[in-house]
Amino acid sequence: MGNMIKTVLFLGLLTGIILGIGAFFGTSGLLIAFAFALVMNFFSYFFSDKIVLWMYGAKEVSKKDQPVLHELVEEIAKLAHIPKPKVYIVHSSNPNAFATGRSPEHAAVAATTAIMDLLTKEELKGVIAHEISHVKNRDILISSIAATLAGVISFLAMMARWGALFGGFGGDDRDNSGGILGLLVLGIVTPIMAFLIQMAISRSREYQADLSGAHLLKNGEHLAKALEKLEHGVHAHPMHNESTAGASLFIVNPFSWKGFMTMLSTHPSTEDRVKRLRAMKF
Image (cartoon, rainbow, N blue to C red; front, top):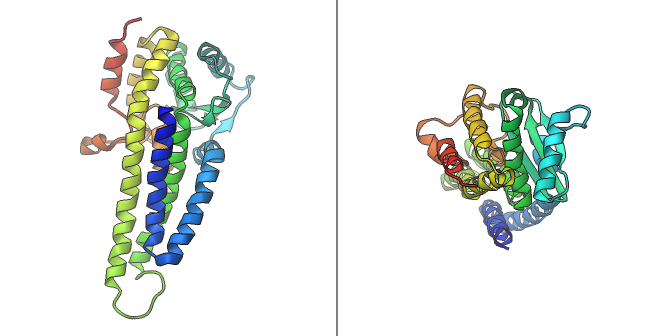
């Protein structure tokens, strides 16, 4: 029930941002934004998993293609008492993994080719247990929807910035500097708001998935070692051109965050996560 309340709350906040963008353009803009938000919420609920998988170029793989990954997903899904999720691979030098889907019956686990090469089988098992825990805890729907809506908001914000750059959208020749300034503020503030909402969603669920995954395996050390390796691997090979909207879905933030910006990461610090895992008693 807690996750359902969070889902409604955060969907409402993100939808409100979209409506706010529409309201800037008057009554007609608000009505268009409202219709757009309804359509986006519908598609996000039913198709957010497919959208996220498409965003990162994930391809479904057979047991023949990836026997070890399939074996681990199947084994841990049985431990968690959920249906086996579909298995996907992302061809990337960024070592990472994520889960998506609206329920345990409609879930997918994706791993990058780099994480398959970097981790031992036991460490990879810890990562898969973390992702399966996201599925079992039913907290992947809200993050998938948030990632989808954040992507839409980022696109609308980009359009607002272009509108400000070229003098607004339509209107007469009178001084409209106030409108241009509003567009510029809209283009800068709204994606920050969407990002802060995603950050609030992501941090608590990462801690919980770490602990749940370790409990499934009765071992926290394998995931702790995996997280340390992934932290170094992501800094060496961060994502660059991919959308940042889905960053909160990954087990570690796939983008490079340095200095002050680490405070704004969608993930808690790896050091803190590792300490919590190593402090666990079984």
